[in-house]
Length: 292
Image 1 (tube, one colour):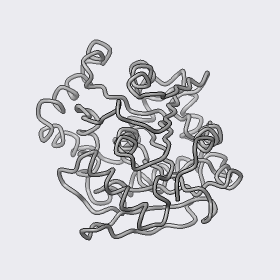
Image 2 (cartoon, rainbow, N blue to C red):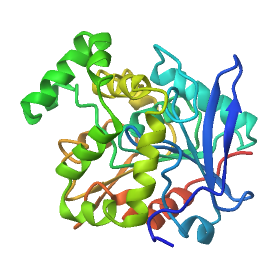
Image 3 (cartoon, rainbow, N blue to C red):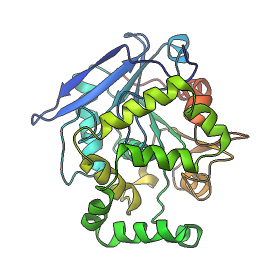
């Protein structure tokens, strides 16, 4: 078995109030501590993390497809707050306790932060989290092409979605493989990881690119998430060689969240979720357990 990923051992869909479906996949013991997972950009529930670690730590890891990706029904015009309410309903229907723990990776991070701000979860690990790059303080730090997309997402979110809707699974693969440092490529090119990643990309785009486009327009625009109102423990994890997810590797983002702790991992890149999964999960579990 690959040390980075393994196939889900349980998967399905949950019908939400109103009739939409939310796709999910699970790893670890069914009676373990529930840890929800908000995956990265353009990936489905298929790509988990912590192979082996979830069993050692007694974690029931539950990845959720955001609307329009993978097995989840589309929800045009959805917001970060809408996702938080989806997760609230999902946790209740799946019997995960009132406030389960959560991990948000890459572009899944702001969605997870919205869950924390809404009081849906009991503690959060943000791993290689996408930052709010539309913050004015970052304007000079962004490459020109990215700056133009961010400006468009702020000024005309619908037009930005139209641009992002031209993206494909292959384009995402090519972007990641051409823009990652060698320490990350050692993970991404590992045969079992590469196969799982490609499958997750294909599943994410199975309904078209609209789900990814909405995610990206939200993530690149102004978030409108009440970060100062977050009242649960938040740990942010970044690799010291990761230059793609946050212009300052989460330093400013950490300061915007009361009591948040940043962990900067030496010699690591954006693949921290897979290379340091046990540390991330152990730190998350050390926080106050969710109330059943």
